[in-house]
Length: 250
Image (tube, rainbow, N blue to C red):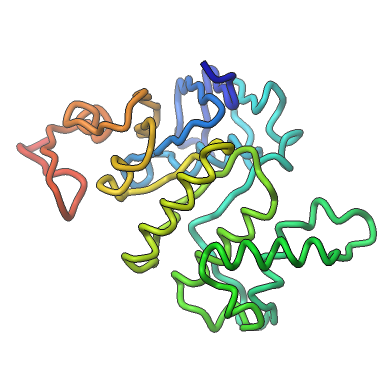
């Protein structure tokens, strides 16, 4: 059995007086490929930000490799859902990818030739090397998403978090991204937040359903019972479209 990468005990979190997460307990082992699913506003992104150390719990404990998240920041990569830059901020695709090396270049704040080679290799892996000199804001949403994945890859993370990684990405590259993630998962723990249940169930190893609290399932199978707990209403699995269908008034 793999050692534990992330452990959460009795976690509670509030935005002001609004209770967003309560009584969360979760263990994620190394080399896990975990899907985080749940309704909008259920706390999925908040949970990821707590693990990353961007937010701090009002109660409870979060540990990454046995330490506080802020001490492990360099071992975690993150691809956010929002990948927009200000239109007035002139930055190229290569520059965005190189930002993943900022915490490792030392006090000189200069990128080495090795850093640039790593950035180009990461861009090539996501099919964006030919755009290396293009302004990031000239790209489509899906292209920007791929550049941000490249930026996360060159941090050489032990844990990679992705919030809706295939948002705005065309169907072909959705499949390519998950193929890449499965390759990375041989040595990297991966946590993906997504609404795309069909793609997730054929790629991940386990599922965490988040709706204020967390229901963990050590299997990639997404069942009607799981969705009923998560959405707190009777549901029916369907092959396409919305992730659930309400069966009676609730």
